[in-house]
Image (cartoon, rainbow, N blue to C red; front, side, top):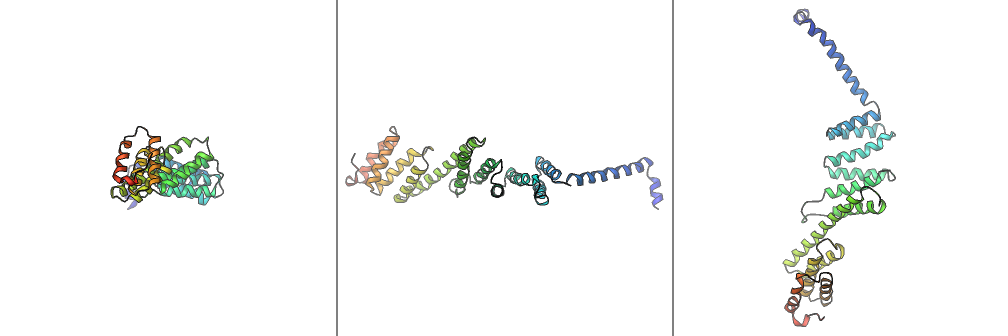
Length: 263
């Protein structure tokens, strides 16, 4: 029966079958050869990463790390895993892997990059709106500060500075937001605390004038003579042309003549 079937197949086709078989075997052998060493496995992982086959890239990098732990490519693979997680926007995983890498290799030549990327990973996890938890902003700022202080000549210093300022502004806006929440509800003691914190900890981010004015008005409302004078004077000194100044006397008058702060 088999002979009958084969007899119906053109001889040319039959002659091609062994060729295809050889190509297939060679291909398989080639694939096996590609991953028979740390270097070749790392190269395959890089190819996957380049093609944005990120999960496969991570698996191959992990294979290098686990199968060839004493190879020079093992350390490269550890850092590459963190980079791939960052590329696929898995910032939490990236952050953990960068931190782990730093703990294992504190004197690595690229440690400035690792610390910077740790900060970026924290930064990228920040919510878009300021009414949500911004605690990771402080972690990002800490990392950016370390890059700037420890590695002043690093190529990442300028971006670290920019990202730090953006993170600080988010925190400042959060304090302003919470302060306004209390101010609008006439909970002036809580509002004053927020505006004071904003003025003291987040200066020169574009919110100083408004925060000083609100701190002043809140101090007037809670009848704190010392703080009323303090923030009025700060506002006059730092922003002599402020539109808020025209409201100062009216605010003091409204609070009562007995509580008016003398110049």
